[in-house]
Length: 224
Image (cartoon, rainbow, N blue to C red; front, side, top):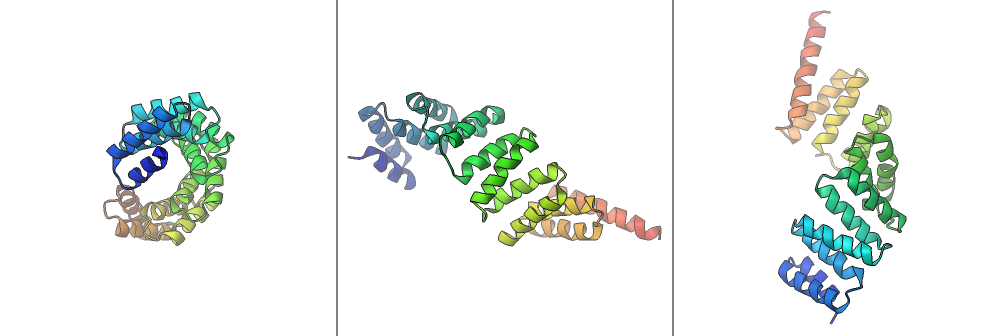
C-alpha cells in the first residue's frame, strides 16, 4: 500500500487523524525517505502545530539537504511564527534547490518585506508576479514594496492591475489614494478612499485619510 498517497488523500478529505496514521506508517516503512516527514510536516501545519511541524521539516532536511519542499516547509513554519529573518534562509535554499514556483519567491519576498528590507524584497516579489500574473495578492504586495521605495508610478500600475483582477480589493483602493496624495491629486485620491470604505466600511486607514483630505479640500476652497 502507498501510505504517502493514502495520507495525502486523507488530508484532502480533511481526515487528519487518518492522514497522520498513514504518514506515520510511511515513515516507519521508509525512515530515510524525506517525503514522509515533509508530508507529516505539512499536515501538522494545517493543524497549526508549528513546533512539531518544524521538527519534521528539519528531519527531512537532515535526510536530504537537497529536498526543496523540505526547506520551503521549514521556511513557512518560521514565517508563521513571525520569525521572518530566520525564514529567509530556508526559502532561499528551496529556490536554490530548484523550487521554481511563484510561492517560493513570494514568501521569500514577504520575509524581507516584513523586515522592512524593501530593496531585497523587490526582485523576489517581482519574480512571483511574473510566475503568477493573475494572482492579485502577489501583485498587491509587490505594489506595496514599490510604494515603500517611492516608486509611485510603478506602484500605481500594480494597484490598478489588482483592481482589474479584483475590483473589491479595498486595500488596493486605499493605497492608490495614498499614492495619488503624493502626486497632489487629492480629488482622485478621495474617490479611492471612498471606494475602499464602500467595500469595507470599517477600513480605519481609509476613513482617517478621507477625513483629512476632505478637511484639506474644504480649507482650500475657503481660502480661494
